[in-house]
Length: 154
Image (cartoon, rainbow, N blue to C red; front, side, top):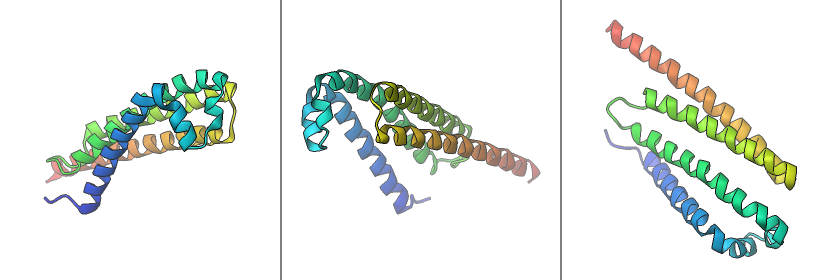
């Protein structure tokens, strides 16, 4: 079966996001001043804020990149022999949900030190996305059960 164009575009976008995120995460110790000037983050140039934000950004980059890897693996499984309704995708969605809640906890932790409206919005976004991932995982798990029952019927 030929891969739909939108799936290939999405896969390339995920690869690009992963590479871009990895480059930014790896160059963060040396490039924080550069990134702060590009994105107009003058607060990142203040030494007290910089001492907190640099390790924080590097720490949240790891689960963020892991989420992208899980999404790439899930998207690549769509055209596999079993299709998208496999237990591996359910486990991946549960891992993604857990990582999103971990990111929400990290942003909550940041709120205790440097509270900003964007940090609060990020935390709420990660909570909502984590709940969506858990819901979607339960949906996929139930569809696997239905498919297996259907396969046994035939």
